[in-house]
Amino acid sequence: MLAIPAIDLMGGKAVRLQEGDPRRATIYADDPAAALRDFLAAGARRVHVVDLDGAFAGRPVQTDLVRELVAVAHAGGAEVEVGGGLRDAAAVTAVLDTGADYVVVGTLAVRDPDAVSLLCRQYPGRIIVAIDARDGLVALAGWQERTAVPALALAKTAAIWGAAALLHTDIARDGLQCGPAVDATISLQRAVPSVLVIASGGVGSLADLDALRAADVRAVVLGRALYEGSFTLEEALARC
Image 1 (tube, one colour):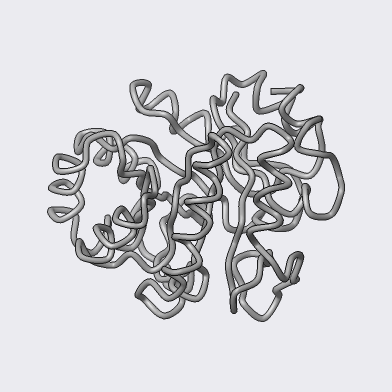
Image 2 (cartoon, rainbow, N blue to C red):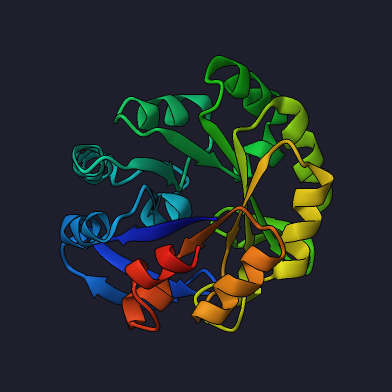
């Protein structure tokens, strides 16, 4: 199982939100690049970067900082996936131009599926579709807008497009360390066996990682648990 540490950017700092709420943000690092170097030193092979300001603004905001983090990660031998505010093809291209290995699109996949289908063909193996769900239904626009789109339906459609991976986040668990949505994640993975499904949200202990691995989940994003010291990235990598 691939363990992917997260760096969520807000106001130039590394933060974590609870349930995606910007009013419930905790600042963990004034220097995100320093946090990234710590993850690299621990052995990270991929890093998940989110422009939270971009997610709420609907357009990339922290492109310069993202470019800096991509350069640091590549110097340390790690890949980078970047999301947040990528609401059109031009924004996706701009992030790829920073050197990011993968881009994560969520809102765009629902609002303009033809565009994402085309992007998957233009950039094979580099487009990750975010499936941010609450009660099994997809949420958009920095998780502020609820839809009637079932997570499973979006997963199957993204697989047809040729998405490189699916990033499944259970919004109600994100940032709370209350345990991951194992059943929902593995249900998506079984529905699209040819596509990597990345679990996100709720991991708070090494036992949670054991549960994901036992269910054959193949990748997981780690956030607050690392920053709060619930376990170290070295411990997570050894467990995965």
